[in-house]
Length: 381
Image 1 (cartoon, one colour):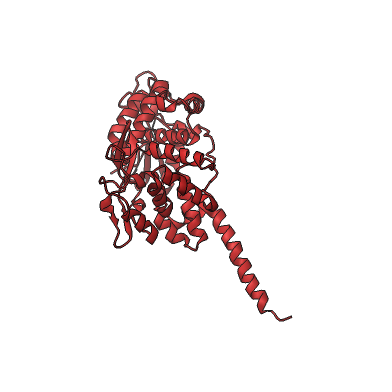
Image 2: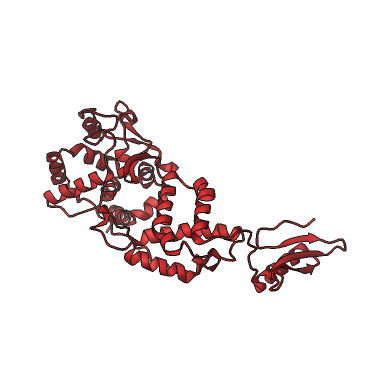
């Protein structure tokens, strides 16, 4: 019996005469349209396997198509039958936006088999320059999509096309011939420790002191902070349970699962943070609800942050930089990297170390100097 191989690899069997045979498709007859089969022979299975691989590569086997797809039709089929089973609901929504807003308008009607790396390269160039969908929220933003978004779109397309290759709809994945823009790491900013008092004073005047204090005391992501409910807070033990996030989806503010399994965690909070929470009035199930009840919009707390910084005369930073501020302060005050990684919900301490390498390098120098000073004091002149 022939040994089944993956799509595009042919099949291998042992013949009655003791030799091994590899069989593969070598295209179609241009007149009849029938599939052309060829074979290679060898004394061992390993020998035939190598011959078969070389023959297929030399022939440039054309895929055997059982169905015809345009790019748009294949993406729809892949989204429904593959992506929906593999990715989180929030990621699936993001993929839908990529397909409907960016890919289909440009390439949706193109036959899948005719899609080339140049088609994709032109798409990515366009998205970087003029890809942003027009809406009220985007009027003040650049016309092009971010490098990160374009790279994410390419990653999604690549997954869909890999699947098409496995289904033998196309011979190879066109994304492999594309050049993507490099992702430049944004400069990390923090609230300077000497400015924290000024920041808190302005936050208190604006009526949002508790929200920003708890975030700086825990390092929570914005969505995690807004998803925090009173049922997640154990004031007696000084622990908060991170169980969900709040984000904007299809124009609505909704609860959603956390990004990764490491994001589900319990965090110890200090005495001052416990006091801040105890002094708060519990008006809603959410610790930081919107004025109308229910979860607060992530956009609102960001706009609020920028207003507070401006009034306090401080440099503009992202909301995520409050998380960086917590991390840097923790490291500088003796918290070890592994403990910090668990508090932040990172997938590994190595990731945390890479993210805050500049801080730990400075701490290592201080430690080296301290040990050096001690040792030098023990030397006898």
